Image (tube, rainbow, N blue to C red; front, side):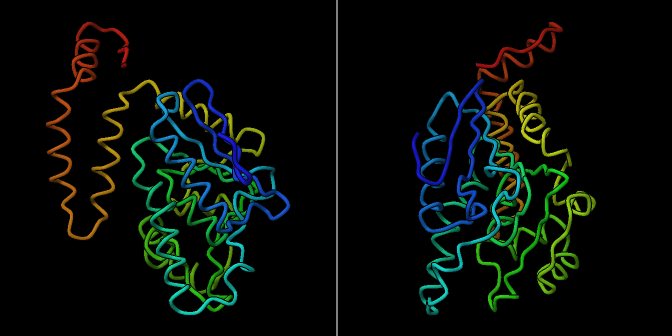
Length: 258
């Protein structure tokens, strides 16, 4: 896959997606959002890609925010359309992605950048990371899921404070809040993400996809996550992975999932 604003590498069943606009601190513009959609759409069908690591090029920024110059003159309807399309094409698309997505946050993850990281299934951060939702300082609110996902991850009070103050938190504070799972050095960020990815690769891809759906359904209005869990649990019994996993366990062997 060749893109103008992204780099995508696939090795050992791990796809690493780099937002590649380092001169703009990897800020999200409309072209980058479209390329992210196309990249993930392709990775969904690519049998060589089982786990995705999402990160930014360079050491300064994961994504420093949205490209404000593109929407500074938008009206009300254009603003609504910007948020709706972005959420559908990228942020919700990644959140519901059937393959594990790990955000490796290097440097600034602000505004749309933090929202992008929060759409991943979990996050790790380098010790130079700075995270925040500064939209209220621009006279708008987070529009790519930030008002919804941040409270889910850190709690309502902390989310309200972060959004209202428009301030940044460091990596360790983000870990203390539960916003990121691990903090590493910048040099170890991608190797650590790959280490986690290899652990995931030991397990059933089919079961992981079913688990992602069940966990996500707990956070969707009008959807009973328990019912999804029961349904997907039952479906698991009809898979080859279930036969392989249970027989390997009973025979004290390592499973070889296909």
